[in-house]
Amino acid sequence: MNQSALPKVLTYALFGLVLLFLILPILIIIPMSFSDARFLTFPPRVYSMRWYEAFLGSAAWMSAARTSFTVALLATILATPIGIASAYAITYSSLRVMRLLRLMLMLPLMVPIIIVAIGVFLIYARTGLLSSIAGLVLADTMLGIPFVVLAVTAGLQSFDHTQEMVARSLGMNRFRAFMTVTLPQIKASVASGAIFVFISALDETVVALFISGGETQTLTKRMFTALRDEIDPTIAAISTLLTVISFLLILSIGLFQRKANRR
Figure 1: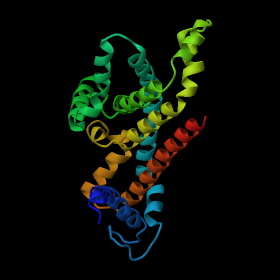
Figure 2 (figure 1 turned 120 degrees about the horizontal axis):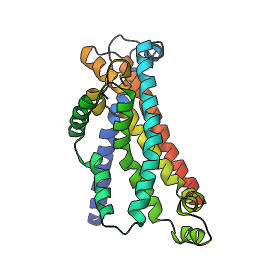
Figure 3 (figure 1 turned 90 degrees about the vertical axis):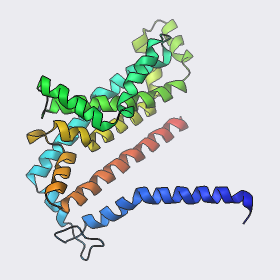
Figure 4 (figure 1 turned 60 degrees about the vertical axis):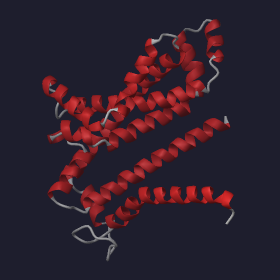
């Protein structure tokens, strides 16, 4: 083998091993979710939809699923406009304080999630927001804003800002110029950020373990509790469904970006 090609081969081999390490749990969980056995077994001896039917037929699981999807949707609705406004201010403002604002908005991505969860719990314990939909939505909004800021900032940096300036020079105010000229051209970035917020809120576990409970128990917390109390194969079915949903949403981001590039 050519010595100059050896580093490239090693790089590809390392990449393949890392990729295999990441997808191996998925390749195991998905077949297990179709098992007919009472306990988690791999490979399944008999394939069945038993645990999907158990999930869809359980009032407790369905209640947790509704809570998770409701919270994820509301967090996306709140985080997206806040993130857009923040990204716009950070990108175009000349104030030095915007650097500090960007740093503060990125803190949920930099601070260990367990520290964030403890801090949120202590605040909610004093404000009465524990075990409430509002508390979950606010926490997931805080965790989701950085995704929107990063995505929209990238879109704004590739956008020709003079187009908006021309619209404003013709009589439009800043908000109308943004909505009419800028937003349509960065909508792929906005959609990407919003989808990441939804996925993040739907899969969030650590904070939910601290602040959710009772009727507001999220799907991920119920899964964690079920794993602690009893290894129920229903968890494998739910994990597969969440993986498929996340994959489809990530795929939609690629489709948005492709359509935007064509235009």
